[in-house]
Image (cartoon, rainbow, N blue to C red; front, side, top):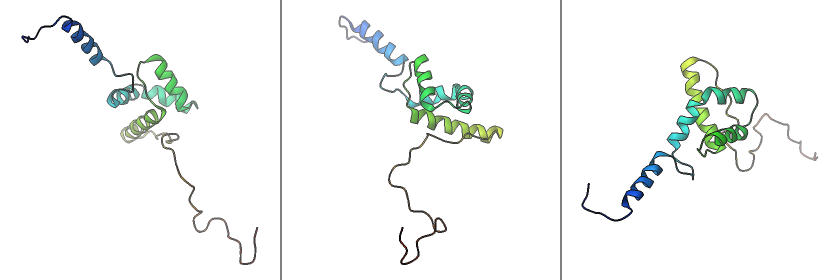
Length: 123
């Protein structure tokens, strides 16, 4: 031990040791979240096949385990694990609905899409 001694330092050490044992409330380590999703992969996959949303699955996880995970992180981690599972076993991965959100204005229709009005014709 060190030569430094102060009343209450032992209590502070114990408190910091307790903090180090669990993830922070503000979100925590993404490695812990990834491992959680990896551990619950089969149950999450079954819930998605049954038609449950990412929000419902997230609420179920957060209600039972003290790890705060967002819908976006949950979907992204699951998609990554699902693709690895597909490569390993050949079982088709589920579509990545909800993992990514498109932003911005929609692009114009590609050539060969809806016919344009001829000159002089207006809708």
